[in-house]
Image (cartoon, rainbow, N blue to C red; front, top):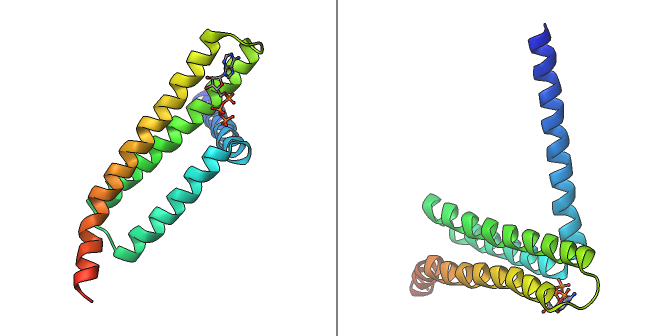
Length: 131
Ligand SMILES: Nc1ncnc2c1ncn2[C@@H]1O[C@H](COP(=O)(O)OP(=O)(O)OP(=O)(O)O)[C@@H](O)[C@H]1O
C-alpha cells in the first residue's frame, strides 16, 4: 500500500514537472520573436516533408535538427533572462554570455539549413524531373 502511495506521489511530481516544462516552452514561443520564426519554419518544413513523403530515416534526421534548433533557442532565451536578472546593468561579461548563447542558436540553425538541403535536394530533383 505504501509502495502504491509513493508511486502515485512520484507520478504526480512527474506530471507537475511536465506542466512546468510545458510552461517554459509556451512562454518562449509567446515572448521570443526568434522562437516564433523557428516554429513557423518547422511547420513549413514538416509540411514540405509530408508533401514529398520523405523516408523514415529522413524524418528522424529532420525532427532531430528541428529539436536541436528549438532546444538551442529555449536555452538561449533562458540565458538572456538569467543574465538580465543577474546583471541588469551593462557588463561586457554579461554581453559575452549572451553572445555565446546566441552563437549556439546560429550554429544549430546553420546545421539545420545544411541538413535540410541535403535531405530535400533528392526529392526536389525527382519531383522536377517527373514533370
Ligand atoms: N547587460 C549587458 N551588458 C553588456 N552587453 C549586453 C547586455 N545585454 C545585452 N548585451 C549585448 O546586446 C546583445 C543583444 O542583447 P539582447 O538582450 O537584446 O538579446 P537579443 O540577442 O537581441 O535577443 P532577443 O532579440 O531575443 O531579445 C547581446 O548579444 C550582447 O552582446
